[in-house]
Length: 64
Image (tube, rainbow, N blue to C red; front, side):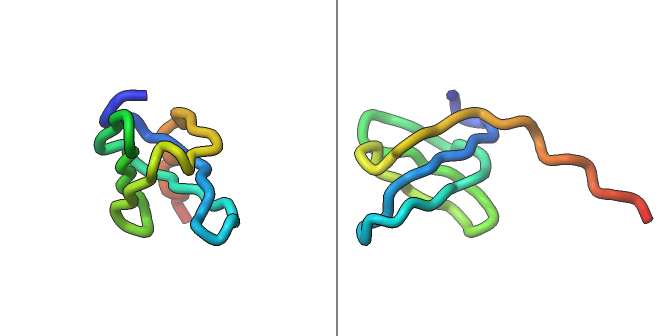
């Protein structure tokens, strides 16, 4: 994954629950991933990541 890719990252919250971040990867290094999604910019510690992968672009809006 490189910055600019659309990604989904599953990670563990402090209380032990898992959640997902879906959006554009802004940056990634040895300590954190930064994803810009619908909930805003999320900074995710690498140690909390369960899984991550690139995903295709969102589908085009439906016409009525």
